[in-house]
Image (tube, rainbow, N blue to C red; front, side, top):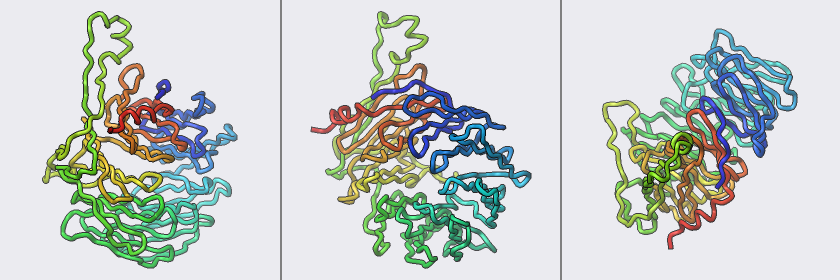
Amino acid sequence: MNFSEVFKQSNQLCKVSPDGKYLATCVQYRLVVRDFNSLQIVHLYTCLDPVMHMEWSSDSLFILCAMYKRGLVQVWSLEQPDWHCKIDEGSIGLVSSRWSPDGRHILNTTEFNLRVTVWSLCTKAVSYIKYPKACQKGVDFTADGRYMALAERRECKDYISVFVCDDWHLLRHFESETQDLAGLEWSPNCCVLAVWDNCLEYKILLYSLDGRLLSSYSAYEWSLGIKSVAWSPSSQFLAVGSYDEKVRILNHITWKKITEFEHPATIINTKAVVFKEVEKRPVVGSEDLSIHQLTVDNSLFSTQSKYEITQLPAQVPVIKPDPDRANPKIGISALAFSADNRFLATKNDNMPQSLWVWDMQRLSLLAVLEQTAPVRCFVWDPRRPRLALCTGNTKVYLWSPAGCVSVNVPVEGSFQVQSLFWHCSGSSLVLLSKEHICLCYMELIFPLVMDMMPR
């Protein structure tokens, strides 16, 4: 594995363009656009205020920078660097801003969710959508970019509006059978809209494009309910994570549960492999020290780690949640399917140091990665069945069906990896610390992972 030099960023604002050619980062007021391959700066823009949100258009030609404190949005063009656009929402304020799928409209949500304003960059036309609901995920677009679903709250009831993105006319408007809608998400094939209730009630609803209720599923009552939802890329499965530490898999034919994945404190499944991270601090002799190494190179003092296969039955570290605090650290907070639909990765909040990988062909547990620190972020390679994760230390971890590997980030100073994401080609990872970014190139990772294969 190779690593790039370190670059500055702020507010974790670092995005690769959809075509994979450019890397955009924000450093306070400045927007820096680099060529992804050479990392040379190709454009440098100065915004009117520190940037709080940054997003590429779908065609990689424009970049949106939102400054929520001032209610401003600035748009920059890569083809015409002298062209720019400024949108001022004025005294009504701004809490979120995003692109439409065509990359020519911007959707701004005002303070207190009073309305969504749709701005056209081509015609300068403005459209208003009233009553958007403030919830976890209240807006979603179909994968083909043709339709938008919006959660609304009117007269103490939940509604869903489906808009056509070409001209923003209303296609369907119907009442949702939820008490307090928490989120909605289109299936990848654009045919089904999943809608789920807040955590006080376990209910997930499946609607067709024309607003018909296809099915409703509830696993239990009178207890904390749904915490996370994820579609498989093929739209065949809908994974629902809940506060009871289980993931339930619904099928796309009957919308009934076909299996459920438990996260037990003791793993006895003989078909599963438990990888445990073991740390080893190197012993440094006096002859290895020099003034240069003490001031510049921290590799002498960095803790090395590797994975060891744990004998079964294996105990998983569990943290008991505080029942007196809101939003208890319990239940399945994160779900992610691999790009080929073969695997599902899950994280249980009261087992924060463990990441679970499930085989979707056999519908069984495949592997558990037990880290020395809580898992902060995990993401699948968009091209291969390969999973990357970080725990807030100086390492990046990778899992594949062949095994696991732990790699130290060899940069000057202390680079604590807080989050990461893949390049769209799967050839590299972008690692983010609190104030810096570093690129990790994956050419040599397959030999490393193959060495970890259990024999």
